[in-house]
Image 1 (cartoon, rainbow, N blue to C red):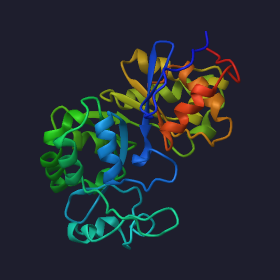
Image 2 (cartoon, rainbow, N blue to C red; image 1 turned 60 degrees about the horizontal axis):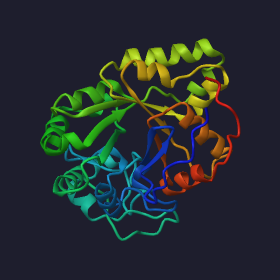
Image 3 (cartoon, one colour; image 1 turned 180 degrees about the vertical axis):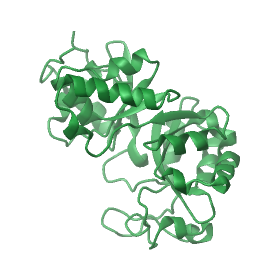
Image 4 (tube, rainbow, N blue to C red; image 1 turned 90 degrees about the vertical axis):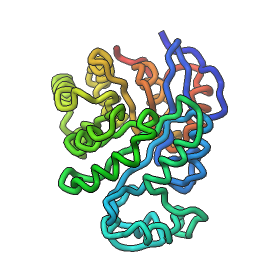
Length: 295
């Protein structure tokens, strides 16, 4: 049975369909296309609205973390060189860059800044995904202690995720109450899924690797490719007590409306997007499904 039209919300927080709520996660703290990524302004807005938000974490020279995606400073900030070599003092002097490379009016968010903003207020159901971009060898005892001190006061607002499960577990174990998420997708996963058995093996291996994970993060293209092969990747995750995040779908992607419809029909719990308001509006505009989900 196709889901009915959503309950309209102008905030880009969630889509409601067939008595199922799908959260819309603000990828890299973007609420609208063209936003400068990882800005304090969007973090404050998301906290106030009860949004689900994602930031990436990179280690810096003082054994703390900063909200940046790349291993180098050059593209995202006015700095240069490896993030891991930049001190807190250096990072405080930098500005974030817009897509055209020009400096924006805000600097990068250090993890302690994020904790201060999250501690000071916001809606109770606001959620911050901390997506760890470091591998396990980069996480030493000093990093773990710094992470523990910083996150202890806001653990209930956060989920720590990543593709490197050992690194996620080492950091999360230091912070009581901090939830964990796992992304089993590799660069070649989509190419390796040739039939339904490959799909079943992929999701079974992911669940076995990260039994403590609360959320499983799946490339939406993998979810839909598996569907085409006759395999539902979402139901096994739900059966294991996990929620499912499908990343990263934007309204300007090819066949975006069909993809959105099928993800919601599969009952994913969250969709990651750079344009949550526009994606919500896209769903509201769908009158009939472009294709029927093969359940």
